[in-house]
Image 1 (cartoon, each protein chain N blue to C red):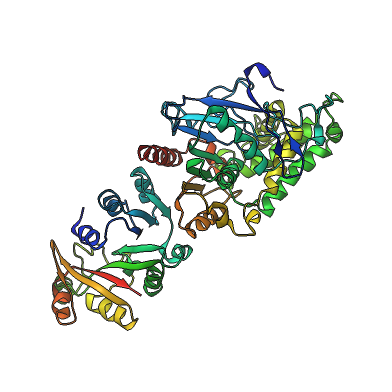
Image 2 (image 1 turned 180 degrees about the vertical axis):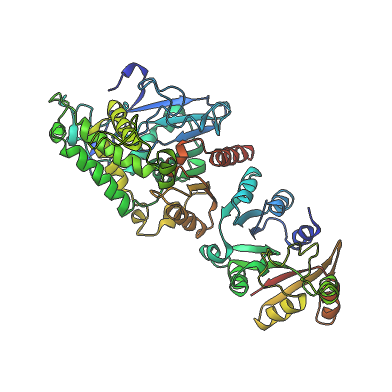
Length: 371
Length: 198
């Protein structure tokens, strides 16, 4: 899956104690950068990717040959302007784009599979923190990300309160909801029910639980869209046929679309990584780490927060984003908030939503001017 | 910047922490930030206006004063400003209480329904008054609870709210309102500006 020649990796020598109790060391973090770090080293933005993202934020992903996942937002003259800022993004540990994960080999040269330790959002950001040392950056200008990326943003500033000037969590939550755990469980069950999963040892059995992974992706994909968006795009339109066929082929365009989404996903993503990363999201509960008081997570930071949600996002709805705003306001933190009008559901943060992109750009550029 | 904002800005000392409730496009916020080194926050209900504030580099929360003031701790701002919006809330009394809880002091401005032009309009034309400060028609006005300077003055007194300063504004002229000139100011001022504390 990894064409390693295109992947930059940092080998982290320092041992990292994981939340599960195990310690890892000498492990790889795969990363990519865009733009250049200025001499004052004050223009770096650390971007965190979501569940199925990777370090290839923008431009052509050299592994998949597709556009990077945040191409609308990141690039020259874009909202996160790489003419101005130095953008760093790394693949989360547990992932499958070069960072230490279940498709790697254990010290006995056996592929980990489900013997890879269960990781958390906290573990992910602690691992990624090593990139600051690697680049000699004392303080980031900003940290940002949507969805699971937003969770990492919140965890990062809580763990390292003086390491970023600005903080932009997008379409996210401080505590994964029952509904979201339920959807993740559905995906995991689809994968493990595939007979090719082989208890996670598919690599050594030369099989791949592609069907299960595709179903997981299809179910998840629905949650990233909105009812209105789906209705407008697909309605009841038929797929390359004049009438219903009275069978179980993809009669409707929406069926065909989902099948396509499932099939292309299998080509680029590892089933075990899907299990590990969804688990990390489910375990995320920042308030719980502070005895139920979310404000305590941010009590030591002077960073400037800007929180963004979307009207049609029912996976990480506005109220869950506002809960973060409320926690910050209750300790007098510097926090701005906007809910962007969009029919595109949770995926809005990845798409061409002009109000979102201009808000992001204006916040970053104005904050940078004040530097 | 309109004269009202200049008068409000003059009431606020340098380096304070201020919340502008219903901050609109952030004109007052920007002025306070640039000229008085104010640590300024805004609360605004309109998405478009929030975007304008962000473009000015201002910290704004999209929200509704009637619901969203409660997230701010007691006395967490030196001043809370509410410009010409009190009359538009469903429950102005509740909002006023919240302003005075969140702010050590509050600055509230009200369009004066006792202004002579307003009175003349109703008296002679027999239709709902439309003036520079009250530009909307009866059927599309956001104003639900119009009051006069006198009404507001008596209202805050009855609630044991301390009035530090009350000013009558008529075009470019501002003057002090007190117990003895209340009737006159209520007739000749377009706008009342109150600096209050509880």
